[in-house]
Image (cartoon, rainbow, N blue to C red; front, top):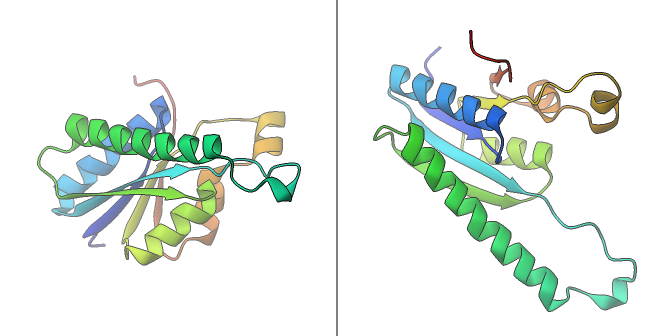
Length: 149
């Protein structure tokens, strides 16, 4: 396989950091460009739809998008090693946002970390990585959140 466009999905967690490190290592190996993707989850719907978006909610979205850009820049600075990097901060649900951005950006590979939840937590919360792997049109590399040996 020849990966030229690698999308790395990240959040502010240690498992995402491991995925970013692995994704950038692969990008170096394949001389690929990278898109760092951070999903900003939408706020839960308001109880009364007549309220609309209050100014405080808009400020939260603006702040979250700004924080997203800061996170992406920090990850690139830590692992990028002069790799061509595109930043993608998207307001969406995690699974849908990753799948949609991978198609729009025409990714050859998605790299994503997993929190390693099991049992009831996995049943209730599901696994974004698992859903992405099942529905993606391109290969998905899932980086486990295990201690390094």
